[in-house]
Structures are given as C-alpha cells and as structure tokens.
Image (cartoon, rainbow, N blue to C red):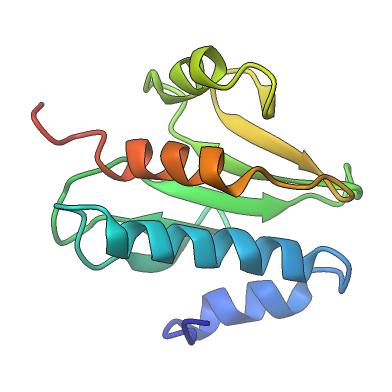
Length: 135
C-alpha cells in the first residue's frame, strides 16, 4: 500500500466512514498500480480537487485527472469521477455496459456491497491516465 505523501489527502481518507474507507483505499491502490503498469503515465500527483482525492498526471501530462469520493447524501455508495467534458465515461459505458453503474458522463458509481470488477476498472483507469497521449 502506497503511503500518503499529502497530509490533507490522508485526512480526507481518515474522515471516511470505516465501512467505506477500505473500498476507497482499494480504488486508490488500483489507480497507483495501473499508473505504474501503464506506459507513458509516470508518477502521479495525489492531491485534493473540490475536497476530493484526485490523481493527476502532472509530470507526464498523459491523462485526465481521476477523483474518488464518498458523499454523505448517498451513504451506501462511493464513486470514481472523471472530467465530464471528456468522452471517457461514454467509452466505458460502451465497453462495459454491464460491469458498472454510471452517473451521467462523469462517474462510475459503486454500491457499498458491490464486488468491483477490477480488471475492467483497471482498463478504465488506464484509459483516463493516457487520455491526452497522442492529442
């Protein structure tokens, strides 16, 4: 498990409910693992955007930021967010129509008790982290 380098991000994770925190930690780990295994991505910056943990390809500029979060108004779910002006979520919906629940063109939403299809999710993460390559 990658240690937190940004204390503000660590504080956000500590504040998540104990039932949701491990789920978001698993998404965080998947993002870092996928970044390390995907050519051209390089080191990620872990920061906060809109108060949510965000993973940015600041050094390579290869991709679109990914955010993860849980909201009090929907306590049994958590999500992975993408920039809504990209075609990422539409592409994910086409490639994986039955693997995920989607929120508009901005998020993959998980229910607390869902088994997350990590292979499909890793593919989506890699697409986001390389979104700007070749553009």
